[in-house]
Image (cartoon, one colour):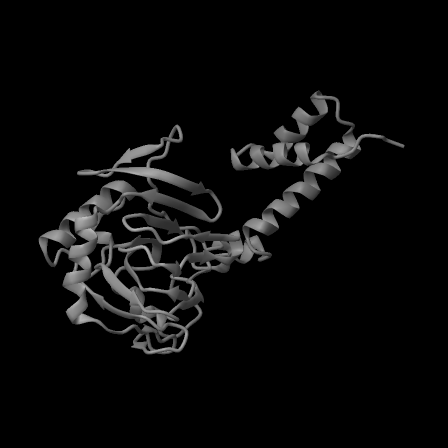
Length: 286
């Protein structure tokens, strides 16, 4: 009986090869060449890849998933600590690959945060959610903030920020919705949800006519709440603390829970929270 055991280190190595695009047969050949017995190598490879695939698809059948779409992606080659975003340099504070999440520091200046809040405040009304049956919108108990939308390029401030985002995420300016500013008072929240439009819902076709699917989200924090108000990603076990000027980006290459982009705005427990959200579409948004 073989005494070789598939170790966590070997499993991690197999996963790294899979992420790098190596073929399973090449990984198996490398394991054999390193002295792994054939039976142990095959079993270890199959078990590890099966688990890896299940995690990446949230347990869904890969054959049943929608085809992946192109998504926005910042240039993080070489794992830089800072990147240029056109007129501004921003910090790279955190990166995850699946789900794809990047936390940027200092995307907005303090003055820009104040200007956005001041311009949005007079136009706030109760936030709405998309109605799945019609594609319209409605007030829903899951979302208890106030909000408003700027038109894309509505004023010089929006135009400057939108160009910065387009440069940072390498996504056409025309493929983005206008900025939405949201205000959360104490106790307000947005329960976990997905930002893509569910293809199974009858109202989705009407929404998609304006630019196709959403494929990425950028949430910019305009202030730092005293307590609470984090952006949570339950599938990733991650919570982003809202910090003035910072922004969290995440993308989803298919409208399916396999994207692992379930997220929400945790309740504000003290003070208030202001954010500006930018949604990116697969096509030109009109």
